Image (cartoon, rainbow, N blue to C red):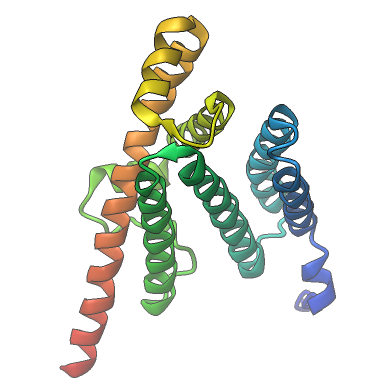
Length: 223
């Protein structure tokens, strides 16, 4: 039986999930360009781009177009999109250091996880079967649970952006006022805060686990 021909570089670049990834980048560029002119359009575009994140993964599996480039493109787009929104939130809320700290945690934990995964020969940063943390394994092992946590984070950040009226908002006051004045905001904040907390815990676990893997790799080389 003859081997299947290998796809060309151009073919991989033009995989359907990767084209969706390019569309996400363009959508986010336009969204952030008009974020202060039209908050609601920005929020819609940003969230649609986030939904496309799940869509490209579905197409990758359905069409057998899974690629390392696609996985990296997906993660980089996610991280940059979230980073840009967190930077904006750090400028409209006080204390802004909260959002900059969340940005640092998000990038550091995912970069370390990606690097350590390839360092030990794993094909995906989502391969955490050898982890001792049940929460970490649940997060990457259950798509619905991971989806809830990720959606919660993005919804929370979008809601905070929509709630900001001035450039020096007090974060605590805005959250309390929104929760007491509208049952819709109260529900959204409650549901999203739970997933947001879990996602931050996973980021901390991920960073520690990945750092340990890097150290164990160095120790193993010296034996």
